[in-house]
Length: 219
Image (cartoon, rainbow, N blue to C red; front, side, top):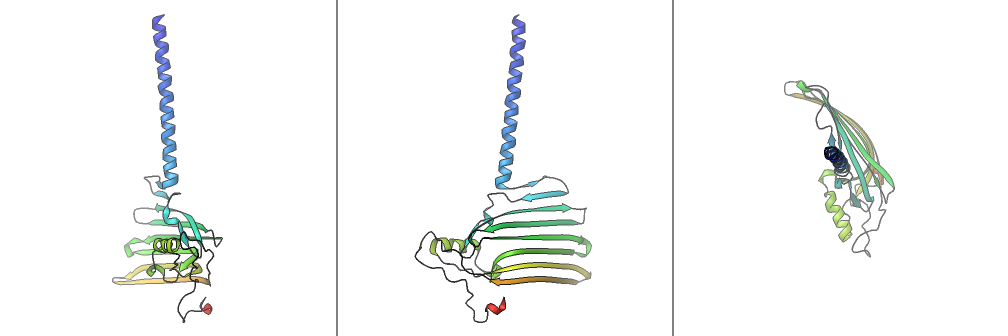
């Protein structure tokens, strides 16, 4: 009888250990999913085809300016190693400008199709608000900080819808051929928010380019 009780106790202990292990696995699995959703991930970790996701807490997709107001988006993409020499990559981003009440986004493709001749085909399309100065302008975080803290909007934004295709390939030793085709549609924008943490009585500067050579007819 004592032996039967001992066997029963050992079986109960095994059941408890199994339940404990199952609970720990579920908690670990939930923790991994939560981390991937909020912080982003690349999956699978190995293989020819990988998907990238930026995560809900990707602060590079959060911004503020006087035209868009608050804006927030998401990023995702994939990389496909088709074989040892050829690869295809795609990166996409999409978001919403709350004060302007508009969706924005971009998608970029890159196909390495002739690696021995450095052949590269690229395609991109998008819609959104862009600074006139482009990459030479003020960093978005500095413009956001200046707007929220001092109500100074240094960016001058315009709306653009675009499609671009480019191809690069070596046609001979030392001779590289580059071909570009693009379509753009531009339109002016105006401020849509007066929000700022400080200096609330101050007005934002109008979203106008201070250049006499640029007028509405240039859009």
